[in-house]
Length: 219
Image 1 (cartoon, rainbow, N blue to C red):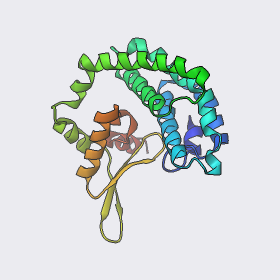
Image 2 (cartoon, rainbow, N blue to C red):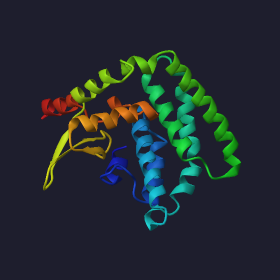
Image 3 (tube, rainbow, N blue to C red):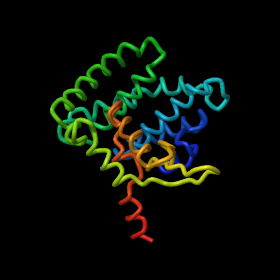
Image 4 (tube, helix red, strand yellow):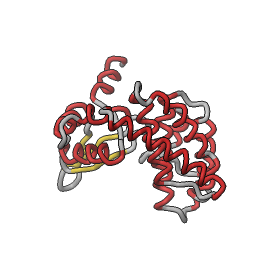
């Protein structure tokens, strides 16, 4: 997946149909961790395409995604039997559900199949949450424990502007920015909100302090 990450825009999306086509071919051979990274890059790409659907670079991306939606569903089906024993599989299934829910297929021939698969995946993901996997990670009901954990472990970077400092966190896969706030607390709150609303797993997807420590130890 190194070539896919290199092809990404600094904000974490693939900027052209040709690059997306190459990325999808590479993703078909991806290992588990790379599947997670690619799925997130694909989500960012589709979101960006939705905002800039008239731009030349984004023409044809939606049809290309439609043609390969079976790849994502296949990953999710492979992970589904392990939802109760491995949080990584749970995260991948939730991410696929999120992508397909927000970017449903346009071809009528695949809509019914995708809808059935999506319902099955959503039900399995909900069952895992109801059994305590997600609440165990979140701690208290108001999220204060997890907020403290985010502030402790996520690497927040600072950028100076003319009038004030901005803090931001970045994705491990491609260096894209997830938030830009005037304080680390505000940025952490934004990450926590996303974690609770769509199952975003910041522990796997963001650069953490121990990542930097590992890099320093190797240099």
